[in-house]
Image 1 (cartoon, helix red, strand yellow):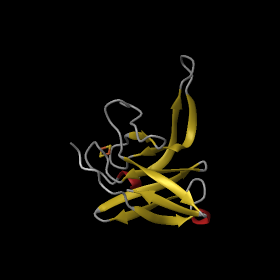
Image 2 (tube, rainbow, N blue to C red):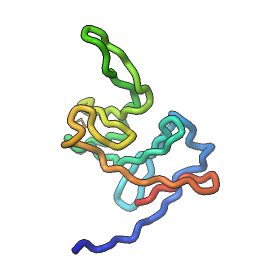
Image 3 (cartoon, rainbow, N blue to C red):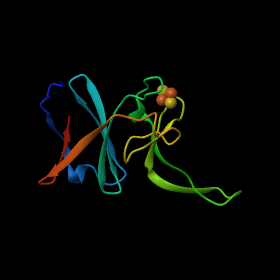
Image 4 (cartoon, rainbow, N blue to C red):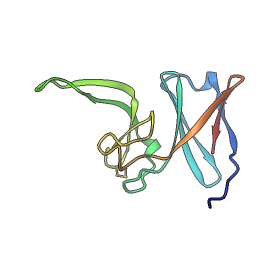
Length: 123
Ligand code: FES
């Protein structure tokens, strides 16, 4: 049986302080969580890379290559991919999954709620 742990609601920012393309790292207890506005959708991930525990949220938010015809290299998804600053692993901010091994490797994600123009992190 798994104990049911109470969740905590933490204020992150006012909506106006976190526009699309912006992010913020907040500390909750001993955890750091990166909160991102990805095209108007808020995403939150633990600031620990599953590879070698780098502070992944210090990495760049970038795009990536998207499916294309042979010998064509198309770029897309700008602003949706978090790139770890240590070795460059890429994670989809939508669900935290690694682009390279989505079924084996992912960032821990958290729920976000927006109430009355305030962004809250649920941990
Ligand atoms: S620690 Fe993140 S890619 Fe190596």
